[in-house]
Length: 188
Image (cartoon, rainbow, N blue to C red; front, side):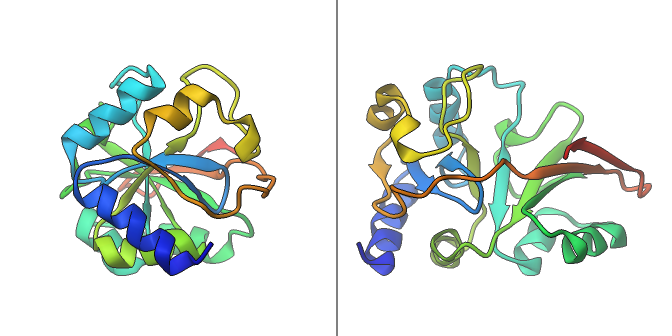
């Protein structure tokens, strides 16, 4: 399949409040417009996940990061520059996103992606993209498209037709950064 066609199809679904199943730089994800509270609710419902468990958001660069976080500690950029694998940063006080993806402690996990499909889709959306593993809450994270349960596939509005044969590596490293620059590794 052609990446531009897939970006177009996914974008049409997302701009109308739909949710998609798509390949990321790590595992398959369920996603939607990170500024659309109703779309985010659909993902929580599909995953049978409590809304108190926040989800992460993908971004395609520095500009989008600064649109969501007024202050980003310098150490965040250092960590991203030095990371050899996909790294999710949990940062304080996000804005311009749906309230129901922000954690109770007013933080949000974000990852800057270079994966071509995700990157191009966000260029079209001009908004961050929700990303949560393609499984029912509490079940193992699928490593391949074949491992994704039929319930999830039927539950999304669009399945991206790329990388169905890709075997996913591990989920991203997760690092929590406070505005006081305290660094805490949550998942290696």
